[in-house]
Image (cartoon, rainbow, N blue to C red):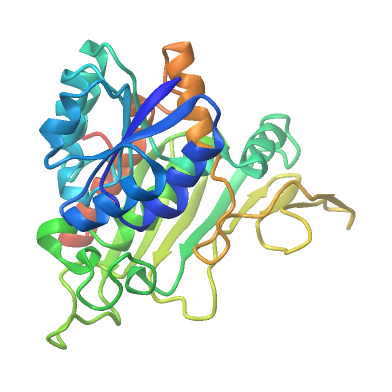
Length: 343
């Protein structure tokens, strides 16, 4: 039985981490910490365990593992502290707000007694795993191009503290906007699906709509438009947006020499493969999780299995190529030029 601590008791903890821990028979919720003390106390009262007054107090307890569900800027510091305390760590994305911090997290995980897993949960959907297998088997031939998208109406509609004052809009706390919230998911995913990595990025990150309480544009991007050239030669687009007001879009379309694969574009079939002769292969694997339709993300089960195996299902090292591409996109947007990843 793993005794679990929740660090950061906001919406992602409440609707994904906590319910999935409760559903796993190997886990017991044992501790909660949040800057909002009453929020942590409320969850401890509801689910058992103790509300701690600080991260350090929680980490000094006999808790075995923690989920880090705090604001972006704190991921690095808390992760390193938790690993040093001998805890297993599941850290929300993005890993950190600089490449140096990401690299330090990887190094800390190598020295740690516990494992570090990053919550790039799109790798874990049965549909994405099936799609990766089909692509690897040559179902659409050699991949030529792709278009992957993740967009919804914005975190101010979903955050535990909804409205224009959400921390997601504060550059000092969030650091990066839609690109870190959604773009990192689809950047990691396209590399996972294609078993390839991004080699070159041309990007524009911008604030098109969102305004803060003062009526001025927010300090982070609400849209990210990226062109990725993969090492294997495929070229495609990745779009992340907080301005999709007609419902979420979490789709990916991949174009190959022998067909086209559409993922999460149809409500009946999560994968559709269109062949040049007009025939289709349709797979009803699962339904993508959305903010309004919270199904299991599979991440907690994968984390528990990882703790049992002593090796993370989604290691910090494996997420580094996605983080490198994200920071290359930011550089490309700031400089107006194409940026090679890893240079």
